[in-house]
Length: 148
Image (cartoon, rainbow, N blue to C red; front, side, top):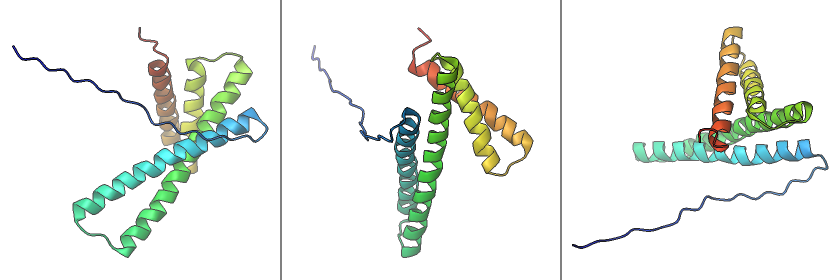
């Protein structure tokens, strides 16, 4: 009976940025802004590439729109990441412990701030705060393997 094997390795991309602003809070916040902003830029680039391929054409105005969107998405995602990481770090320093509760509170605060900046109603701000807290808590559970 013939047999075959398949093997391979998958390595995660590593982005190393050294940020030293003389304060751990600022270091973490700026580092998060840069790294998560890069994720936002990549997301926007992938979306615009898909749209260009789907349409089958590319024009100067399309490129200008894509570049403008890249910048906006990068800043938005970077700001969200910076607010979240900075808030989580501050809560950790105040509480003196590092656990899922910090992520929940930081996620809720970030969701509320981002929603408030978007000038949405108070009900939407509360819903976004709940969503932010839930997503951050779920991420913490998955990353710290609380399930097994």
